[in-house]
Amino acid sequence: MVNHLTIAAPAKINLFLHITGRRANGYHELETLFQFIDLCDQLFAESTSDGHVTVLTPLDEVPVEDNLIYRAAQLLLPYRKDTTQGVRLTLQKKIPMGGGLGGGSSDAASTLIALNHLWSLGLSRAQLAGIGLQLGADVPVFVHGEATLARGVGEQFTTAKPDEAWYLLVDPKVHVSTAEVFNHPELFRASAPLELPLKDWQSYRNDCQPLVSSLYPQVAKAIDWLVEYAPTRMTGTGACVFGCFSSQAAAQEALAELPQEFSGFVTRGLNTSPAWQCL
Image (cartoon, rainbow, N blue to C red; front, side, top):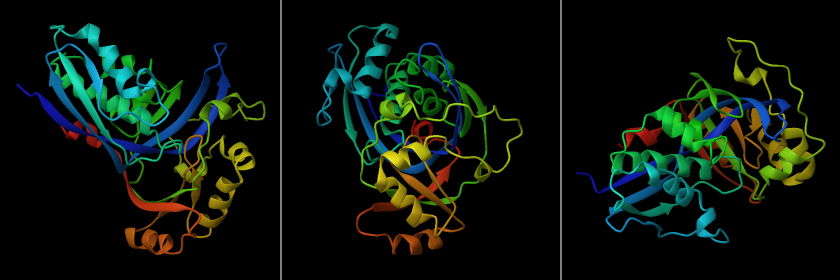
């Protein structure tokens, strides 16, 4: 019986993000193309027999009850066949927080995947995705584990296969509030629904990018610098932006010119999540 495992929690980029409306409950109707990248947090899960969920690596300024890996584990407690089953969770963070890379959602999804395996719960990916939706709109995509055109509030999937390109990811070193962006009165929310099959992702846009660029000048500055080297887009609600390159070497050459006020790294697009490959 497996009593511990290490599982990857990959970052994601939104190759495009359209907002097609807003529901009465405040949730936004989205159409977005998710692709994973090979930048990953690492989650270490060790089973215990005390029935409790213990997080050994608390996040600064985040109460443990608000920590997404803790909340994800709590949601699976009712599915245990043996209530003495517990877990100790350790998280090694590599994904910048507040950058639009989905680190928290990915960590939560990998927690669900890990505990489903560690506790032998036997839940399907669809069941885990449904549970994950309670934690955030991006969590089901990470559970699903394939590059995806997501619709609705992020729960309607169409598997996609964009090129697994090389990207230079630039972090402007500002923290963008997703809630602020989605609640802002000037956010554009009227994109027309897309027709399938999709064109190349560069034919589309990120509806959040103009607003975030106006609210956070550092994001606009990062875009203005990177677009001189490659087709450039902000991911999610920001702050990180990415440029798409034809090769790793080309991306590395651009990285060498990165202004010191930003941080950046070269990464590869992945159409299959490494989380499931860890089991």
